[in-house]
Length: 296
Image (cartoon, rainbow, N blue to C red; front, side, top):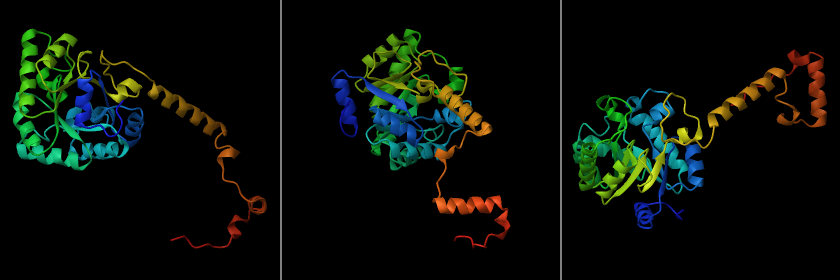
């Protein structure tokens, strides 16, 4: 684990030493704080927030306003990790001007870099953003913003021709100035072949162990994602959702049984004041209490 704020130089040094970068999503201040304390190298404020945080069926329904809210919260909690903001659908595709403006808004909100999906066809947008001084990560393989074109959540790069197309897209992103590419949902050897052709950093999510680091969705590994998607590549490290339900059931049972709040959860009174107030309650004297004006 590196000391101090993680930068592009830190990430390049990890690769040079053969060390894997630890990459995880976060969408709120507490999660960002906890994973940052745990020593992760990178945090992605993913457009997956559409599903993990907002309950939408896919990533297409989230926009800049919601993403900027999540980005600001995460950047307040991330003191050390390198924060990447996920540009949402149609925030960069329409024009170079839109890409630079929206990526710039992420940087102004505290991000260290932005991520966008697509290869050769978005390379001009990547070039525009990098020319504006913005660090850009590409995203290839399974690209959820193109779900309709891909025919759903399908593994990508299953043939040599398919891998070559992905590699060509990755090279176009590298030529456009991207500092890294994220490969999603690819067989391990296919992803490794793409990485072998590149000089930039290559990270994976469900793309095998042969890359420069691993990304996971925090809700997947913590066990608090509400939905039906269960990717093969997810390893669950906790059952936070189950713990939330259990704790809430116990709380509800205590309230209904009168066990909560107990005396230790109540603010005490001085004995003489307690006696006076108890006497007032017992005598039904509430109606005769003197009038007190409302505080400003």
